[in-house]
Amino acid sequence: MAVTGSGGAEMTVFTVLFATCFCHFLNDTMQSMLPAVYPLMKSSLGLTFAEIGLVTLTLQVTSSLVQPLVGIYADSHHHSWQLAVGMLFTITGLFMLSVAESLPVVLVSVAFMGCGSSVFHPQASQVSQLASGGRRGLAQSIFQVGGNGGYAFGPLLAAAVIVPNGMRAVGWLGVLALLAAVILLYIGRWHVRALREQRRRNVPTWATARHYGRQRVAFFVVVLLVLMFSKNFYSACMVNYFTFFLIGKFHVSISASQYCLFAFLAAQAIGTLGGGWLGDRIGRKWVIWFSILGAAPFTLILPHLDSLYATVAVSVLTGIIMASAFSSILVYATDLMPRHTGVVAGLFYGLSFGAAGLGSALFGGMADTQGIQRVFEISSLLPFVGVCAMFLPKMTRVRG
Image (tube, rainbow, N blue to C red; front, side, top):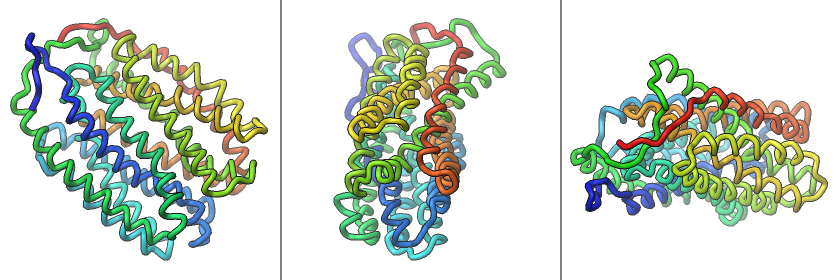
């Protein structure tokens, strides 16, 4: 249940936040395992780059299409079993993928995994907001850093377990999904109890300097979606093709390329946590601007570096800076639509997966025809889309 301090203000429930963060870690570990084994899948099943992109597109589109619908449901219905049931889809997908011998079976498998993720994110984000005690940027970043950590750990798990043992080892990850399901049952029960006992909060929040009508709020949300789209489009390029880029340009092994990918993904986790903490203190718009202006120089030079170590170092800096805005963008949207946190989470997490899937498919086709180097040269321009942040309204600190 919610915890209140001596002054009546609700306090941050870190036990729930860290438990939700850990489940996010497990969920996204299983998701990020897939791109990490693309080189193995490509060789064992004889897939093209375009077919690799189609696999990611299937995974991410199932998430992006279903998540907003789950968010709408989660705003008006709260059951203790909602979070845990998504893991049943994930377990099914993992076991199907471990025995898949053709592209159609792979696509069905990843579709199940995508549906499992789509059930998890909207309500888990709601839980984080409820447990935040008003520190919503910090809470969202703690929740999100679990996902970033999972995406960073996935390639390591693939390198240590799946690459040496083959695709059948994918089924072993079902143990992680089962563990997450058990923890989520307890989190779901806390969520239902906390909602029943929730009182009006007396903690600092952020709001627009003046009231805006629905059309203006919708416009601001679209701007935030565009920002999220550009960041996740670039992230899709890195997550799915950075290993191929390093193998082709620097002739590193598959395992070595996965460790380099881990460095980029771990940097995103650091940037997410720092960005959420700063957003609560200096304002979310400043963090968004820092993410835009700071990342652009590094994305531009990354494809043209001739040193492996310099390339990895620049990718780490890029990951930290670009990821710093994720929590600020999502919480900015919930500040604009405070009664629709499930819808906001469904839209923005859905967009994240959808952008990743679309980006993977487009970049995969480009890689087949023009090469990996050209893919990274084109994607380096994506941060400049972020200048549309100039249209966002100023947020001021108020009391709830």
